[in-house]
Length: 304
Image (cartoon, rainbow, N blue to C red; front, side, top):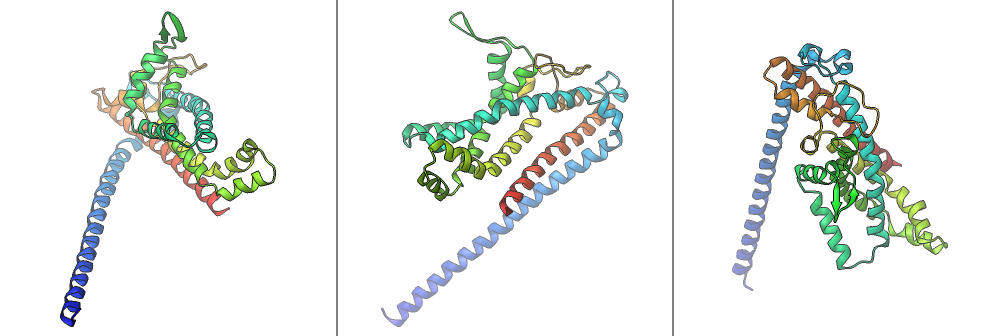
């Protein structure tokens, strides 16, 4: 290759590198601009909500039942209903999710069937929540009867029906998070345990699960945070917006904070919209708190 050809190739390479660098810088600025637009939009919405509802926040607002008068209305029943539903959802969903993740990652044979199951679980994580609401309405609220045999009894718009619906909704997310957490445990830990004579189950129970616990807990808390702000699925199963009593059992009718907020925003009186803004602040604090707990847990175990 002559000197002229070598120079030409070098110039082309330099031009290609310069174009890639220019595209990289342009992409960086575009992404930064999009991020700033999103941040400013969220900041504006947060400011509007806080400016509107902060004056309504008080202990009476948190401990009063809903009322037809905006000045007397509060969040007591929706806070208690949210607590009932979230605790029951965790009890129902987390053991199933972790057990499924352990089986898929540690015991299921590697093949097309397992790959298909993984793919379907990932697809279920992207299903809109309204679909889960329709499923809960069909199966849990109205009951499931096959060939004249009652498989699932009719539950009505109860706490148990709402919790089962939300458990189905967060199950794929929690399974995916748990599978990824288990996968991050170094294979050397499993191999060392098995080499010392431990059984497969003993290895999972005493070594794999403790090592994957931070990731499992983080994914679980984030899934719960999503369920805490869910409205569409619970409206579909008939979560009532006006509950003026404390829930005593899983068979009671219930409401939750997102449904209460939705109900107040549909009323024409401006005072109820102020109540809705105050309730949004309470819900935001709860969801942000759950996310903060997830971050703290992850960082603590990462350092240990």
